Length: 299
Length: 140
Image 1 (cartoon, rainbow over the protein chains, first blue to last red):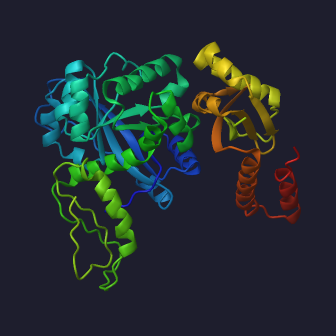
Image 2 (cartoon, rainbow over the protein chains, first blue to last red; image 1 turned 180 degrees about the vertical axis):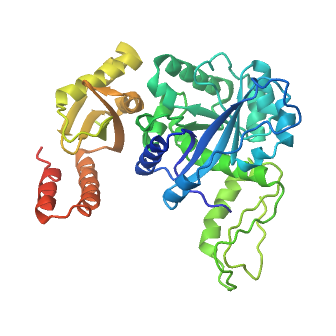
Image 3 (cartoon, each protein chain N blue to C red; image 1 turned 30 degrees about the vertical axis):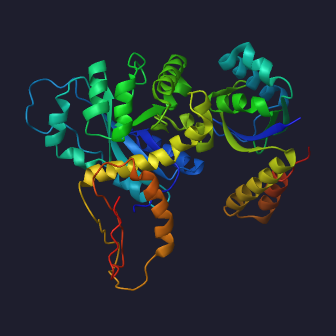
């Protein structure tokens, strides 16, 4: 099972200025985050009818130098947020090659119809709301339960809430709405921080849960467990139906030793995520030494 | 009679050496923000037993005391504060303890970790001594 480390922050907007990115990443390390995702947004609704059938989505930005610099301190994933109104976006997504290069796919619907589509049949992992004008869209109960059953997660960004007072009110409205419509399940927090001053430590973010209408336990889940579930779901979507995923990380050594200690705690995680993952049989095993008796752990 | 002691660190927007915060500035800032987000209802709830117990300008660490039932109001708005006094700064919650002794224990451990990191980069022995004296001075 793929190992991930707490804490998670899945929304760091990409900035062309490397200095700003470095300051952000440094602050994240200091605050205790270990897995983050750099976000790019793409506006599908603005695409004209000119390009048809060709690649619509951009490639991930080149961040290899940042990855190398923070190699053992941070795990840096890449995420794309697709703003859309038109349901035809699913077709564009299914023919896109660039999309598979991203770890996480988020959908940002702009209309009610798009929101329902996002909850029910969007081929992504996450539903976001526009920080500037998102409070018009409130989920309805049916779409919410369907999204929860599918394993879609809803994201609340606290960075814009810190900076701007109107936005704060909107975020609180959206978040409290989750509580009324469906007991605030499947919610994650992320920063959306443009500047390192908008970042807050994980303990602080969990404290914000009270304002957003979540219980303390849900708040702590929102920054830890749910983020890990989201990551696993995204990986399983990206890799398709796989049984085992072996990544070479050095010379292959054949040995009898099996890491039993690791598998015990992973089994607990597996049980917890069993109900959330879709029917895809997915297994991520990073093995340097292939074991003679290949244990197949089925989700 | 049950209190909660919140240990926080103040992180300024621009890193400057020593900031002039007093108990009064911090206390006023926190109460203003509680009123801003929770109104007079919030103020009424937390004012009893609310006090800034300790504030060290050099290490930028402070301890806030409040009643157990008021703690969630205070800790929920700490992340939203961006202005303390007249300085742009943010709060970083370090620890919430039920007694001030536990809080102090945590702060001493935290200072030691900071010292270890900082001293490793300092070259002269005198600088090291000065830093040690400055940081470990918890006089209240």
